[in-house]
Image (cartoon, rainbow, N blue to C red; front, side, top):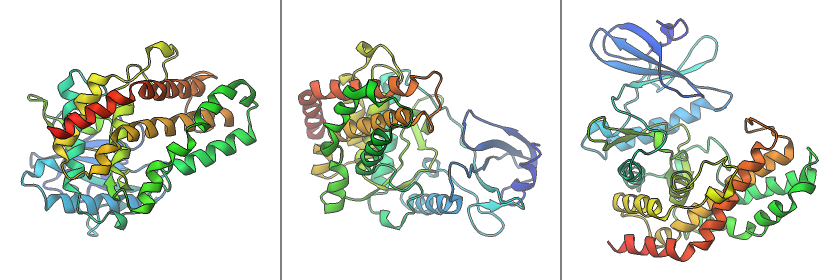
Amino acid sequence: MTNCAEPAIRHFQIEGTPVSCSEFGGGHINLTCKVKTDSGKSYILQRINQYVFTDPKAVMENVGAVTEYLRTRVSNPSEILHFILSDSGTYYYVDETGEYWRCYEFADGICLDLPESDKDFYESAIAFGRFQELLRDFPAETLHETIPLFHNTINRYRLFREAVQADRAGRAAGVQEDIAFLLAREDEGGTICRLLDSGELPLRVTHNDTKLNNVLLDCKTRKALCVLDLDTVMPGSSLYDYGDSIRFGAATAPEDEKDLSKMGVNLHLFRVYTSGYLAACPSLTAKERELLPLGAKIMTLELATRFLADYLDGDRYFKVAYPEHNLVRARAQMKLVADMEKKWDEMQKIVAEETAR
């Protein structure tokens, strides 16, 4: 067994005795191990990265509250990650060095970094839409905001303005057009925040990392089984989760594409995802449905401000492969925004058509 994991697994109420423990998966944040037992059951054991998640207790309280609630809403338990209680009755164990560990039942399936077919992307929409639907009555305000102001675009723009003003890396003079592009859309960027504050948009439980590889798919049918990686579950807007899925999954090029002629929004994939999301989440309000395209645009704008701010700060946050990497990323996101604006009427028409189905 993996030396550091062996003592931790013995503090969880698993079935059987561990017989093997090995590192598992391709995650870069938490140490993840697969534990096999003599009962035939397998488990995932994770050490939570406290550099990334500075309040792991709050993270696990959110995860525990959400998964316990979801178990009351589903008839098939395989739809929900099943976390295991520790010997102290919590969903985490703290070892003698202060490290936080958690354990959940191993679920068999596949995860994809990129869709291999339209069906894969559609199934991810079903998974995240159903996640939202199942949690429609959960009191989102009771969750911890484990990453404060994470999708508060008003605050993101404030930080962007500060980066422009400080110009720590002396790069601002060369990116004045990029700065102007983002500042011209600042007011629109704050729309979701203002509508949440006014109550015109409902506060919901949001996943906040709606990439395809956070959906477990059945190996044979490729149907969505469940949503993974609940570390960033927080209060927010459904438009955050939907919008980030479109930003990532319906783009025609990677987020660090240098050739901007390749970057845009694929309207076919936009329709595929929208169709699945709306089918799985009928409780979305009329206002939420109306603003789905804006959710995609704002999430893209937000990331562009973060990339360009980091470029101006001297690349202190995002890992870069070359000096202009963050600028390339920012410009790719801005090109995606510009293409959305060109196709705005078509995007709105697709949402209206899929809503009417």
